[in-house]
Length: 123
Ligand code: FES
Image (cartoon, rainbow, N blue to C red; front, side, top):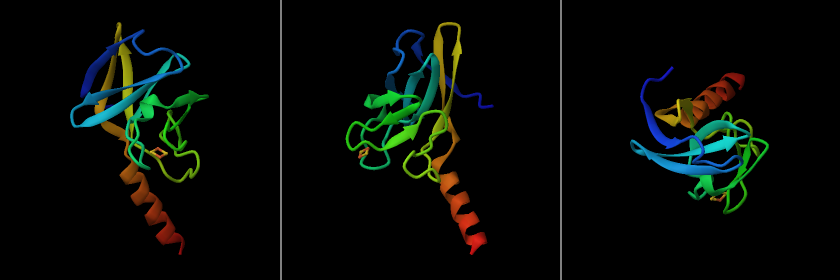
């Protein structure tokens, strides 16, 4: 469990079914209200850098507003290639405050390295 939580918004600031982006440390994090549960992923789409917070959220998947790449906001999975992920951050509600960590709990780069290792082992 990370301890570097930063308050970024108040409950009610992010409407259900939508997202907003917040600068936290050196990261820009998209926080979504996914059916009443807050989820946090890297705001920058890995394709060409669009803000995923401005994408369309449907059943825990956000579609990038530029070219439609889809990501599962629960675990960062890229829906069109499930072996790849984007960064996921821990988010919590304390009282009326929505708080997020600047350090990912799921790091896309680590995932990629792990995938490469298992592919190499399989060869
Ligand atoms: S910038 Fe997101 S799909 Fe192209």
